[in-house]
Length: 569
Image (cartoon, rainbow, N blue to C red; front, side, top):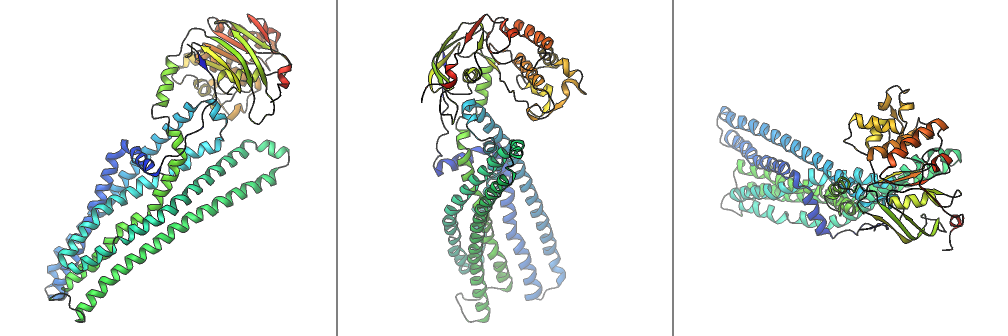
């Protein structure tokens, strides 16, 4: 069985709108119960408005129109207070349930995106901007909040509350019910027209935000270099330009949202005005569409109900741009979700089942070129490494030793030729020339290789890689916090931590790039002794210039200087 290292494919194109809508709703499956509870509370609170308006109208009719004792209105006022309190409680419960649902949904979605990014592989990840990838789990996931916590609740309220209010209006006065029924469809029609523009504007805004995030993160990462070369003012101007572009796109989204709200408020106001005009003219006797005009209580009930019939639709319209933003956000992160929910579980299963037997590595006609380079770093290389061998790669600086290790580790796709590893499930450990350390404790950086490792295993790996030589002098030992990229440590200390991390991973194929650089002779001797003991039963490929490191190798492979210049493209 063999494994070929090749370039990862780019993310697939965005799915059609109907598919994305189904995927949006499918994301809510784990929290559907809480969203339904929130929708039910919102609907019941809307239905209680009918009772609230009825209590007010009954009290006014009895006291002002019928001349009854005001004390008779006290039960209606008490019922009004009870209904108001109940509606407030239902609104609070709906908000709590919706917030809990959206929080859980965001966390689950961020974990799925992270699994997808890890599953994409090192070659694809290295071609992306880290700031843009960060926006996927930041602003893009947050953009879904308004859809699930706002739009879906408003949609449920629109489906359940206005029909009940229309029935109540038809029961009291069919003419008012007909007026309300005829004006309601205008709002969804306009929402549909505005929604197309809102979605396109939201998509442009999210892409601008992603570009802005990537641009800013890259400049922060290279802040020291920017300062050394005196490019601070120019880069600040670039950041200002990117921010201005984002501001303009954000204002376009807000302009569409405000325009839609204004027009919808106009339609709702016209509807209420028509109802008020009909009632006023009926009381004045100027029109007689019914045998008798409605009573004062009935007219007040209808006037109180008329704006509330349109209120759910207005709220739905206000959240309609949230739907557009969610669709645009899902389009951006859709590629990250395509691998499926179980990508991380499959990777974990492969890691747990990785072959312990030392693998053989075959390199056949391999040519490698870094992105943006004009010539190959390695050209036409062929090399066979038997299982269990410890091979030292030697050659002049720039001959492609580090590039070759990156390709075997899967960080760099071949331009031509192939790399075969047998068995294919062999676990790989890689220590690059510049190992990356995260902000956190030394122990946390070691546990990156095996999160479930206990303290004894972590300490044993640290002892083997000579990390304890300097860690014991630190204030908190292995719990001492280091800065990102190993800030606060020397280059040799950072390499020893990376080597301990590989020891803890327990790989079958070990790739080492100058593992003893920056070490004093005594520390180098101890590290190489530990490395020689660890290498037994494993395949090791080590790029080195050290004579002491060459002594532990079973074979030396020399990369010719010609590969430093590469073949013509």
